[in-house]
Length: 370
Image 1 (cartoon, helix red, strand yellow):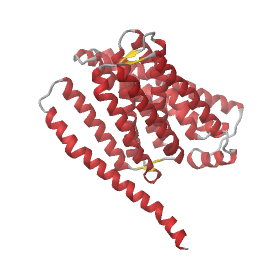
Image 2 (cartoon, one colour; image 1 turned 135 degrees about the vertical axis):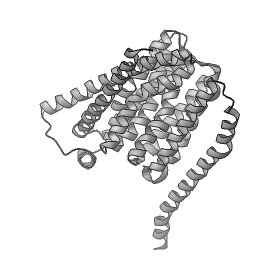
Image 3 (cartoon, helix red, strand yellow; image 1 turned 180 degrees about the horizontal axis):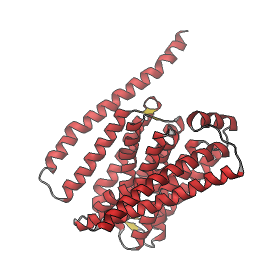
Image 4 (tube, one colour; image 1 turned 60 degrees about the vertical axis):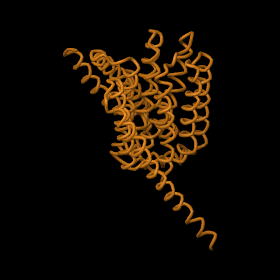
């Protein structure tokens, strides 16, 4: 660990922040001009672009015979995307959630997470299962594009004017500028994430941490930095469709594209360790399931819900650190999570759901009374 490692980490962070700003700015303007809703842009273009680091790391680690890093990268990134990134974005500004996300995209994310767990039960995500995941991605993209074409330009323009910057002239020069912002922003995200991951992995190896834990923490957080930078920048700029769509879309892309393509490229598929199968994959599915009531309540993700997400991510990473160091406090930590934190969270979310459904039923009851 030397000065160059620290310089690569700091430089990568700066490149990431600038790249995220350019990507969100260009993508949001293109969304309004091309007649595609900002949500769909967030679920496809931005999500795929910010998942590029995960894809690069996974292909490299899979071909290099490091399957634990490949699996840990995807699983850890999906956990971080919801608990850390969505949580941090909601703390900055409460996020609006469109009904399309609740009714369509979150269930797809949950279904894909469960399917991945089922594929991994035999200890291997095979090439055939990778083909299934990637084929599902192609159908998902086609479906989103067809769905966006049903919207009228007037509807998209009104949404664009309300959420984003004032309308700009659709000149060839402005088209070129914004397309350039997207392309350069994506490139900077990939480069910045690579610098940070390489430097962070060097530090982690210096401390003697296992490859699975490196994949679940250092690599996962590092490759999720594009999503973090993009979603936080979108939340700050008030572009909250992209902030939410980016996280949900990235999780879908991570499983269908990153894990799917990695399984196809490697002839024997990707082995899944017992540690990942028994703990980390179930946690990924549980986090996906737990996000649904949060997305559902009131069409918003409130600050207090973001704080809960971030607290859970801190607990998850704390457990990984305690486990890898064989700390004596692990039993106490497990009991606290099992008998206090989790039941309290379930109770809080249940009350929120009950309150939300009560509000929705009142207008219906009033209409029947009239």
